[in-house]
Amino acid sequence: MVIIAKPYAIKFYKSKQWLGVREYVIRRDNYLCKVCGKPAEEVHHIIHLSPKNITNPIIALGEDNLISVCRDCHFKIHREDIIKKVIESNKSRKQSETRQGYEFDEEGNIVQTTNNVFIVWGSPGSGKTTYVKSKMNIGDMVIDLDLIKQAISMQGKTQATDNLLDASIKIRDFIYTLIKNREVDTKTIWIVAGLPKREEREKLKEYLKAELIYIDATIEQCIIRVKADADRLDKDLQIDIVNKWWNQYQRGE
Image (cartoon, rainbow, N blue to C red; front, side, top):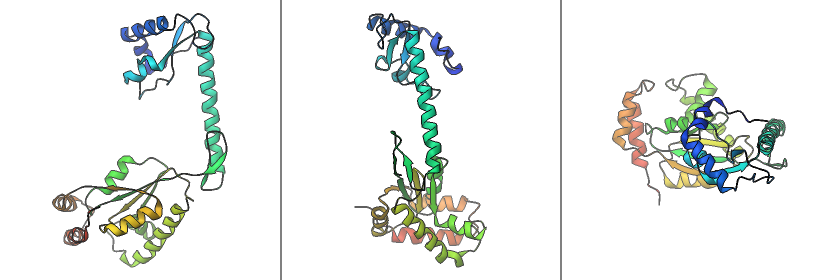
């Protein structure tokens, strides 16, 4: 059984560089299959090639990632890899069927979900939301007081919904409790907050067992961004909010 190269790898397998490395690895392994000891016919990538790593020379051409194999063993390796992927897919499906806060580990045992919690903090206009959007994945949880207000009012962030601030804070604090107890079915949680006072952010960090990520920007940069943001209608109010944050700002230890 011949392993057919994926379309993205055809050019790579025809390259002189690969053919030279392939010959070197087979000679290195004394022309024998490293799995069964029969005559080697092909070279296998231990970490399989993918569109993302095929340009990485350590993976694509590094001898530590290459072994000589016979065709039967090469096919068996890939067949078992396919089976492994099917098993992992089934585990993922079963995970969604378990009660919230639990998942299957690599051996199929049910364990409590481990969340990575990041508190992204900084001045209004510093770029906290932009940072989270650039890092998050589908299925991540994002907690932002402004977004909570929008969710329970069905209004945009420029609408006057401060009457719902107290309710939004209670909803946010309830979500914090779920995170603390690791009852959220997600791998990564992003918390967007101002937190200019050191004691407040350190307390939240400890409560949620989270990592703090400071979005570094000067007050001048924040004001420029606020002025340029079309969604921030009352510029004078927004600039006042930025100035108030910086007046309260306390650096870390």
